[in-house]
Image (cartoon, rainbow, N blue to C red; front, side):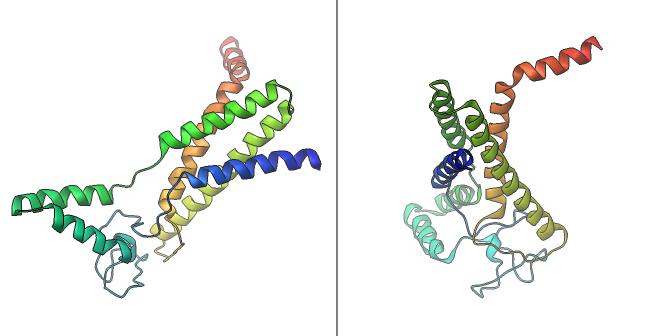
Length: 202
């Protein structure tokens, strides 16, 4: 039991580290990518908590709207600047940025640390494998559950609302799963080489 406790502690620390690197979005989470979608909305996911007849999932949070408006009006001077500036500002606000590079760097550093600890015999190879298998499992579960929620919300029109951006976290956990999957392939490349070589011979 104590041997299994250490890997789970490592998993918890690594998971918290990843969460600190990722920004949570609660608004602008339209599954169809709509902006300022008016009542009654284009799908069953329409929700309007601030009663402005615009779907919450298609607009910025209320506390951000005034700041955005001030930034636009204060930085643009004439009509052409206004038109171009609003377009550029909206693109910056509406294009969701995912953290592929930061997540990859964090995971690579953590993998090097655990691999080095294993090589220095501070803990065993099994512990190293368990740590990364646990993180892979957690990322798989998160990505799968959030993906299913997106399917339910889009295909069946059920107004599923969570205090986080479902699509954002689905992609972020998918990135974690993909990067760790690459680690797994590299670490076990001899095994995969044996499989493919055996198929070619057969």
